[in-house]
Length: 400
Image (cartoon, rainbow, N blue to C red):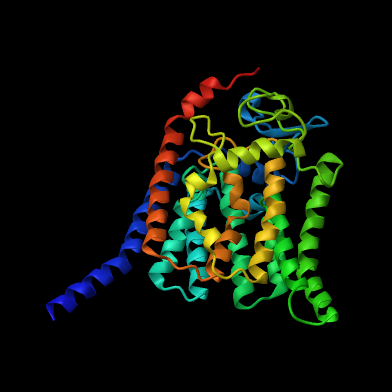
């Protein structure tokens, strides 16, 4: 009887422990978000929208860092959806970017947990998956440091998980297409994730006519949002495909297209020639105070379990294949995403890798959980290291 009680207590502790650990980590993230100053990139774009204009309002000290000058006006290169969402908060004077980031991180944690539960993982297993994503990937870096560039990742990841959850639950294709479109309006590369659902529908069951109808339901809302973005870009830069990154300048007023520093390659915003070097950084990069990028396998050592997926059915193969266009676009961008912990652009497709793991019913063995815990420790240490060395990075940034 005593042995049975002890075993039950141990089992209960194992089930509760991940939730206690998650609460501590989320509280830590909340504190960091609360003390982080707003860089005001999104709040300024929102203020411009409230003033009825697309170009940014004059700034104190004429500081136009990270803006895109064009035809005598300064525009934001960031995607517009977050600024639209924040209109009520900025109008009411209660916008705090750190608080938005914190609640966004909570939403990501819950959506990842919810997806695991859809695949009948236990509550504690679902919590382990959520811990893995929120604190065992580059996500912890964007969640802990509430800048506008990081906030785009938080919001786009929410939308991607919502789309995946919707597919697994009710599969309302119009809503899935809309969610991926909204993700694209938050971070453009995430829009390529629509390929995953297109492939699944094309190779799924049904007649040709049924597949066409499903594709129309999926793509109409997605294309409508893409059209709005194209009009928004054309109104600013006379080019529906130009979001502003071709003209963006740094804090010294030098175009990023001409700035040669670690983590940024001079030249066009997107170039295939960037892929080899950026691929190497994403796969084998080591931690550095420059924040250029760190290997995703060092940041998330449990990703090795992707090679041990027991059920590579057609859908899993299609999900894996569809992440490649997103990865290639991220790698082709002139920046590695510097000012980061890990390789933050990987978040544009990581929700789909977690979907693949979960739908394959990968077994959360003790070793797997141990790797998740190790990842959270490594990533938290690297996040604090990144925050502690910001002044050193600023001192080494030159105008040359």
